[in-house]
Image (cartoon, rainbow, N blue to C red):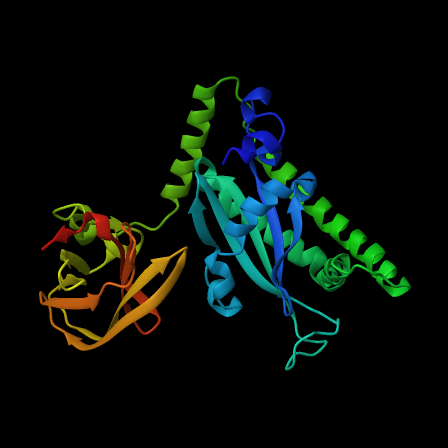
Length: 348
């Protein structure tokens, strides 16, 4: 997005160094029981006053899949990512203690606040993004967990047209809390920037430094089993875009067909292993505006080794370009997941 080149001051090339404060944006958001998802804090703080920038960014922040994951589920992950427009949005979700009166039945003063921390970085910095987010999360939760309740009350008061004396006290206390969190974010980014000790004079040196960071990230990952290497080979045709676990899966798509007259899509899945797969669910969802809709689910009690299964379902959308997400799940584990683009399907 061009906003990042315009709003964050001079480009990183101007200083001859990878200045994290100029290429990273940090968001803290919360769930308001009456108004839905709300931004609480943006860093650098001057971006809070840029209406055009926030309108564009809010659409991405508020459709991030982190919102639809429970705190317990995502706690098992280091972070949840969303890539868009050449940037990566790394997110972490957590609870914060609360003592404010809630505006929805079934919730009381002690119902915890749901907080989402998002780090927005260029994709070229993916190798270090996870560690930066971890440092931000640890420092914020260690030093400011009790500050979120009053900070959220301030956000609610900001939306009021008429404010009473108590609201003014809340605004003052909430402003101090947000300033404290902002100061911590600035400290984390500056300390990590100094820790990197990357000071370069030209684009070539910067690329070498980033390549080294990427190498370190890949080197620390556990090696994959050798017998899975063949699955990196592309399938025949070009209707499928790999988006996740496909390279490690025993399952693959062998054929996809669009039956134009019947307005149906046919998908052929193959269990490439010699082992049976028990009690799995094949799910096909229509994807629209980042959301998965109109699920078509089929339970498979026993999927024999090297067996092909054919699935045929009604075409939902009316657009020329449509997306469908094919998933195979067993209990809570995703065995396979790929996206299908209708404009690239074979038409019969």
